[in-house]
Image (cartoon, rainbow, N blue to C red; front, side, top):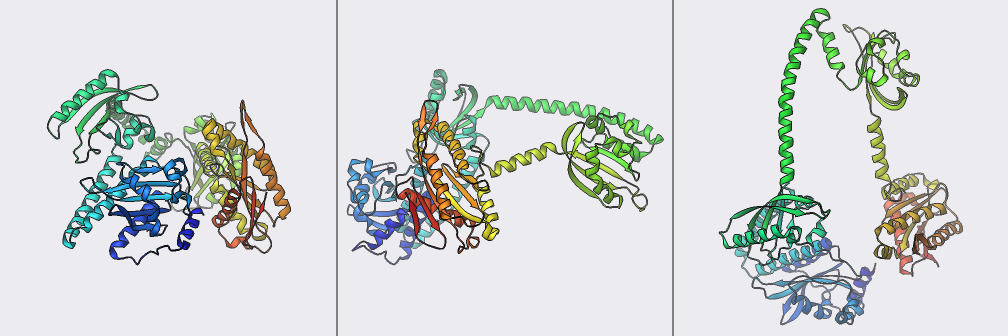
Length: 639
C-alpha cells in the first residue's frame, strides 16, 4: 500500500521527469530492474551509471528516473564498498536519516546497493533496491544482488563492442551460463560433501551433502570457520598440508584424515581431499574440499559385506529349500495333484487371509494366517460355516458382497470388524469360483489388515488440514470450508474476520520462540471461546488468525459484539510463570448482507478483502476493528 503511495507521489511530484520512450538498449536495463525487483521481492529497483562523478539512471522499476537527484549520498557510499552496501533502516543512520530520500515524499527506509565495476576494479555505476519499510537482507539475497550486478557489468561491457563481437561474446556467455548451471546442479545434487573454502578459511559455498555431514543448518554453519571444527593437531596438519599444496603444482590434490567436532559435541572422522580452486578473483580463490564420511563408508562397507554374506547364505538356503520343496512337491503331486500343492505353497506364505468357501458358506480351505489372526488352526476351520468362524459383525458387514460374488461378480470391499477381540479395518477381495464355465459354486476370499495404513492416512489427512501448534484448522482447511459456505448461497458466508496480533514479534525477540508458541496457543483458545458454536476459527499463518461466521447474514451489532469480545480477551495479560505478556490485536471484518453476492467471488478474494480491512486497522493505530461490506466501498472503523 505504502509503495503504491510512493509511486503516486513520484508521478504527481511537480517537475518530475517522465520515463522516456525505451530504445532497444534501454529496454534491457528496464527489464533488468524489473527482474531484480521480482527476484529480491522489493518494490523499487534502479540501475545508474557514472557521468562525470554523478549517477545517471539508465533503468528503473517502481519509481521515476528523477529519483537520481536524491541518491547522491547512497551512490557515493555504495561505490566505496566492495561488498553490497545495505541500510536496513535509514533513520538509524545519522547521515541518511536527514536525507531527502528518507524524509521526503519517497519515504525510503531500506536500501541495498552494489557497485558496478570494470574488470580493473574501477566503479562505473550502481544497481540498488529500495523499500518504504525496514527490511532484513539475508546472505542469499546479498549474493543474488552481487550476481545480478555482475550480469549488468557484463552487459555494459558488451555495449562497448561492435555488433559482430557482441554476438560472439553473448554466445560465449550463453555457453558459459549453461555450463555453470550444469555445474551448480551437479554440485548441489552430488551425495558427496563438497565445499568451497576461502583463503580466510571461511565457507564460500557448500552443497546439501556437506550441510548434512555436519548435522547443521546452512546459515549458522557458514558463520563458522572450518578450522574451529578441528582439534589443534588436525588443524595444524591441515594448515601445513594446504600451504604445501599452494606451493605445489596446479591440479594437485592432497588427502588427509581428520576428525571434526560437531555442534552436538560428537566427533566424526573424515577423509578430506583438498585442491586449489582455479580462479582469477581474489574472493573466489581458496580451496575445494571433498569430505568423505569414513565412519559411514566403513558402516556401508560392513553392511554391504553383510548383505552379500546374507545373500550367499540365502542362496544356499534357498537352494536347499528348493531341493527339499521339489522332493516334497513330487511326493505331493502323486497324492493330491499339482494344483492343490501350488495353492497351499502360495496361500500359506501370504500375510493375508486366504480361503475357499463353497456355495453353502462352508470353508473348504483356510491358509496359515488364520492361525495368526484368529488363534484357530486352519484344519479346524475346514468344514465349518463362515458365521461359525468369523465375528458376527464382520459376517453381517460382508454379506452384501458375498451375495454379489455368488452371482458371479468379482467384489472388493473395506469394512471395520472385530478380529480376535480387536477392532480392525479389513480390505477384502472376493473372486467367484467357476468350473468349466459353470455358475459360481463358491468363492475365493483374500483379506488384508489395513488398520495401520488407514490410521496413517487419517493422521496425514488431519495434519494436512490442521495447524500442528494450535490444533486449529489451517489456511487450506479454512479456504475449503469457505468454498463450501459460498456454495450454500444465502445460508453460507455471514462474515469473515482476519485477526493479527499487535507487537507479537517483540514476544519472540524478548522471551524466545517457545514463549511465542505458548502465546499463539493461548490466543487460539481465547478466540475460540468468543465465537459461536458453528463458526470456524483457523490459524492463517504466523500470528494471523481467521474466523468464518456461517449462516444467514449476521446483524452488524452482533458481529461487533463478537469482535469486541475478541479484542477484549486478547488484551488481557498472558502469564507464563514469571513472564507476563500483554498484546493487542487488529481485526478486519468482511461483512455480507442480503444485497451481497459473496458466492460470485472466490474464497481467496474474500479472504484478501478481510485481510485488507485488518491492514487498515493496523494503519489506523492498531487494537481496532475495521468492517468492510462487499456492496459498499467505504469501510467502517471501530475504536
